[in-house]
Image (cartoon, rainbow, N blue to C red; front, side):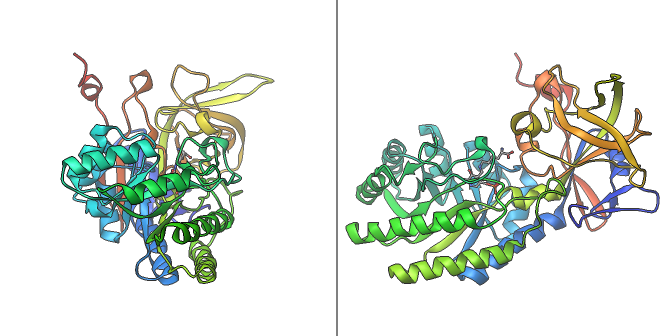
Length: 432
Ligand code: LLP
């Protein structure tokens, strides 16, 4: 199976983190997200240990909490010692409510409002990752009004086009994020940051893309960022203290996705970064990575109950479930691949080709095309969609007034609700 927290018991049932997935659906109701706490912790430990070993004590992984954000996840991340990447006042608020030490929070976003900036400053967010000059002026002004000096990283675009989904490419010159090195805007914002009285320039940030399976993009972006840092040192006498290379490695949605050794990759990047620093006579900056997907994706799966099965002779078959694009919009948005399994029929032959679709009034509400399920699949069966821990709950919606799903956390044979199911009352809570 695609991850070692999945197995099959003697009854042909899918086990997740050692627990019978369909039994959990019967206990907590359908549909349902499950998360494997041990797996989240192991993923954190992989990045934490590899970064400390490879880059030294000053290095730190930051969990990109846009991947999934709720109170308990920040508590786990805090215990594992990682920092966090937050992208909105809402994520900052959630982290604060969970008791997360916000001095280890890095506040992203290409458009922070004055209210966001004031809120983050009041909450004591450690770092702002600054997108553009207008934002830098606003932070300087608002920090000044609060009698503070704010540490910042400048988000730069190194101009790299990784081989990934177009919609999630962010390191190119024409990206909506950051200031481009190629156009000279990166240097302009750096010289401005060095002048503004309430700004403390800690270093530089870049993020090239998501779901990458090798270190190629990290190596190329690190090289460009270090060359830029050396040029800045030569021109302005400023030495970069922190270098943040952005999001983490890819995950396995299907058997086709490669298995990668994250620790070995981080060691490879460290070797190249150290050699480059030595060549440029730059002290090694405190290194940051911001993995989101690879911390939580394979620690999650979604369970559904099969409803209508529609066979259109000569065309195609549909298996409908009681969720869909409202809990997982990634196929609709990115044509993303997923593995779909019949959770109580794991040992049956799979020869029924179908599209697994949701319950929304929208033809694009598809979870996956070209799925092979057992021919005995019928109403009431349980389906599991694997690797849904990242960008599913966090991108969920109430389209068609469908309540959001609960999250059940599994740990060492125990399970507990960490996000409750939305109720119909929740749906009308803000309606007047
Ligand atoms: N840092 C920055 C600045 C980012 O923009 C992102 C992702 C990350 C870190 C985390 O990257 P990760 O390790 O998760 O690959 N909704 C899309 C993903 C959008 C990612 C945006 N930025 C999806 O469902 O695939």
